[in-house]
Amino acid sequence: MKKNSQISITDLLQLEAISTGPEFFRRQRVSGLLSGKHRSSLKGRGLDFSEVRKYILGDDIRNIDWKVTARTRVTHTKVFSEEKERPQLTILDLSRNTLFGSKYALKCHIVLKVAAIHGFRALKIGDRFGAILLDDLNIQIVKPSRSRQHFQAILDHAVTTCNEATSRAQDAQPQVTMEEALSRLLGIAHHDYIINIVTDASLLSEQSIEFIGMLAQSNSVMITHIIDPFDILLPEEKIPFSDTNYQIDWKIDNDSQEEYKQVYLNQLSDLEDKLAALNVPFLKLRTDKDLKHQLKEILDENYQR
Image (tube, rainbow, N blue to C red; front, side):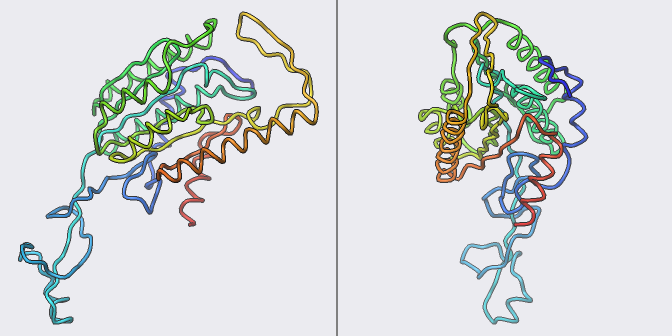
């Protein structure tokens, strides 16, 4: 399969078929990707039965579980968990950090596809969906909405932004960064948002990780990391690199190949440890494998735990 530097809105709309299914994290109250209905942490007169516990003065007597009370000779009450709509925001990193792909797809194309799946799933379960589009020139914030027309406008704009970024010459320095996008997100997502950050996470700065930790204190945050085969292992040959203005040839030998691999793997391991300490799920997707198959493998592996 030949890699294409352009992506179309049709490519994204076709992903609606795979956006249905069970919750992504079965054990967690809220899922980031492919999430189901969200139960709030509040307990009250809700839709779903949660548990039975000992009666506490002030509990609604209508919720007393008389069978358990009779069996234990201690008054017990039923507790219900309420379903709660939660707005979703996805950061789409379309900066130069994702304008690369060595084989079948560019990283930015996987970014767009993952964001599309988030959006389709949010609309199906009645959540509002919004996005933050980050490229080297701008940060564009689109507020969450339940409108399908609104969602498709996000996809249209994201496709245009991605295709323009892959075809233009890159300036020496980006005008905006992920740190700025996360900082602005902190001013929006005060609590109870589902936040999905889709990027090449190996390039996240310490400041970005600090912002992610702050967001995770009162929101559900998940990172989707896009990996290309060249991130891990460069071929042992002369490789041309170009930014459309200049080109260099990099000669790779065994030693530099192994050193390159270890630096990347160590960096990734360190990142995973930091995110685990923040209780932020870390999903890895590759540019050289079918997205649908990768998601199925992740779901199957998660459900077997």
